[in-house]
Image (cartoon, rainbow over all chains, first blue to last red; front, side):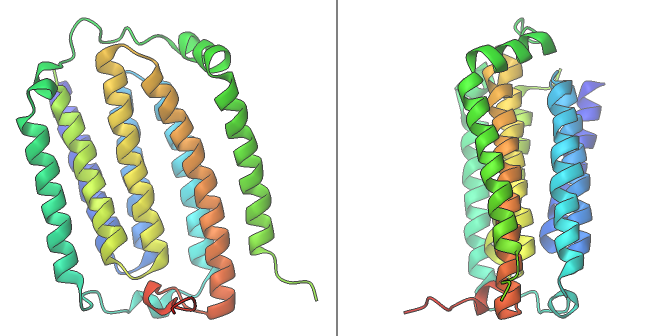
Length: 167
Length: 100
């Protein structure tokens, strides 16, 4: 049963990922990426971390992709949507990417250490949400605060970058 | 019971699809979106290992990756907006102003 769910979510994630890369209209890419993020959130639920699934939906689908859609709709993308897809140099690049993917998959499927690891007794013993929040706010408090500062810097930076010069 | 290798293979496939998008597409917005796909594949990998090993650190690193990715998107889109305002193009091939 879990296998069926995982195959469904994985197939939809890969399919929508391919749509992101291959769609001509950037809005189609953005919507396909939202679908992909939702499938990844479902995979997180399968992996026993509903908190990360909720964070994925909140942050990625709800904030990042909405920001992308704002920017896409703000800029005039109709010209670019009609651009030719197969430019020169696409086929060698695709060959290199296929080679990379093939190499990664071959190494992953042939690795004994990866096949030796399986969801055994330790599954579900990662901890509850309470354990996660305790770890985040006690053991990893410094990185948490640093991330807060990074978000503040990103906020200020984005405002400065997108501002027009007030002559 | 889904074997762990399935999750890691899913992460690898998403990574390669994202890499293909970054390398092949000319539209800067699609490049940024494919990059987000690559970051997502990394979080899938992290959370799957966190589950199989019973270790919380994978999930915590995944939270930080999501936060950093969000801030990176904000900056990248700010740069993109400034770029379009100055050069009125979204094609990565046309942005050659620093070419020697």
